[in-house]
Amino acid sequence: MHTFLEIKNGITRHPAYRMAEAVSLKINKGEQVAFVGDNAAGKSRLIDILTGRWPLTEDVLHYNFRNKTSSLLSDNIKYISFRDSYGDSDMSFYQQRWNSTAMDDTPLVSELIPVIENEELKDKLFTIFGLSELMDKPIITLSSGELRKFQLTKALLSHPELLILDNPFIGLDAPTRDLLHHLLKDIIDEFNIQIFLILAKSDDIPEFITHIIPVAKLRNEEKIKREEFSQNFAINSGTLLSEQKKKMIGELPAKMASSLSNEIVKLNQVCIKYGDRTILKALDWVINSGEKWALSGENGAGKSTLLSLVCADNPQSYACDIELFGRKRGTGESIWDIKREIGYVSPEMHRSYKKNIPAIEIVASGLYDTVGLYRTMKEEDRDKCLLWMKVFGIDSLADKLFLQLSSGEQRMVLLARAFVKDPSLLILDEPFHGLDLKNRKMVKEIIEEFCKRENKTLIMITHYEEELPRCITNRLHLTKNQ
Image (cartoon, rainbow, N blue to C red; front, side):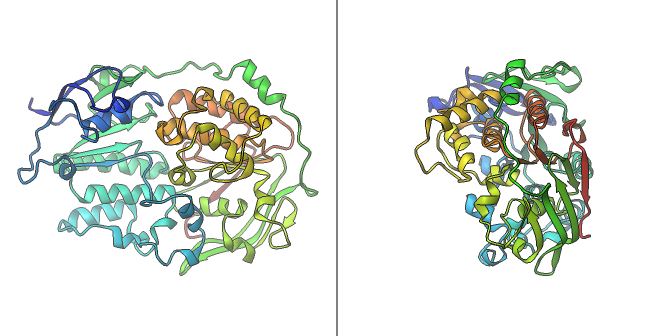
């Protein structure tokens, strides 16, 4: 077989970006490869080396591209990372997403689609991903799943020789995941493209993958065929949450119910529109204290928009008949009065969180509902943060800078941030994004243990039914354009 990529004893010049040992591997033409490993195993660091992001001590990285007009890696490789974003955005974009008056200066999806001569490929991608109905939407209004569809379409339209996708299936509803599996296989067959996947969810390996490169402890192991890949990352069926950690959660001081009403959320005939687009139409929804809700629906059905109303982030909530914690919106309560009772994490928050401060300060910001930490941390607050970081198994990361953590580690930090105030209402929008099998199971157990306590209410979104905790008591399914 002809060699597509080869690297021998690759060592980055900068020590901070090195693997635990020199990188050596060879990938042949036609091999579709998944790099699989736990959070912080070194998958993204390895890919950065293979894509030439960091200069090496010697010229030992070589590709054999068909493209004779350009040998530049940037012209032949397209890489979509887990932290795909709206551009150079920060938390201000996260807030602007719900504010129609702040969207005038943000580009439309149609303005960001590259010009391409292959109309057949364009039509095929637009049909599969439903891009036509998104073209007139400002980019920052896309849901997590819609944004992923846009990024995939944009990358595939450039017809690269190598397409690298970091956790491409997360954030997509089940039908779209299946469509993407088939599309990538068709792209491989039709355009002779090679694909590398970076996967923390090692039970999500599609059939078109021919080989696996396991990554562990900043080392790449030998390439093996998919058929030979044993479930190296499997976990047993027992609990991962120790009795000590269960006790830490269970013995937290009980909080008095903050609402005079048993109704935590009450929406009456709520409608949300952006221009000609109706996101929510005449929605009635009541959540009582102690209920545990699973919120579902296809990408773009309005799930995140609905949660923005509950979290008091959406200005349109003032024009709607909404009661939160027994108080009608617009009757004198502040946003902070509402947020004080809510712990929240979402893919949008993760993408927009670019504060390069110590992880423990990210967790502490959840106590004050701020983006960063703009005050001196009290000793008792530090103790709360360390308690929850220990529960999530990330206390060793307390003093490490947030942006230097892996995406999985960052997600664990943001989860600890959601729990740290011991909220009455816990809102988890796709909480397992980017987590490996072990961490997904552990976080699920943490959610279940937390929800055993009195007056704890949960709203959770996931596109994977098996990720829902056993404590779910109610369900709401949203249908797009209805």
